[in-house]
Length: 76
Image (cartoon, rainbow, N blue to C red; front, top):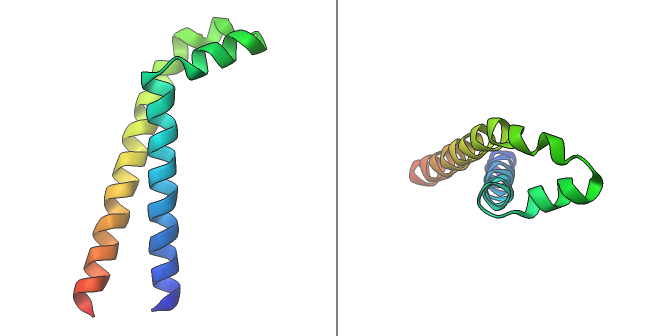
């Protein structure tokens, strides 16, 4: 059970961190400014095609990890 708890905690941490990073990049100009500084400003128009699905994926991963965690706690 300890290994399962570690896996659930890792999934939850990965999901939350990914959600926060994707949300920061979606809703603030952090990534746009960074791309401009690096010289990749031409790619800014394509960010929405990557960031919104990534945000959705990380939110789903977080929900899945929470579901697994609560399911395991209810089984004990």
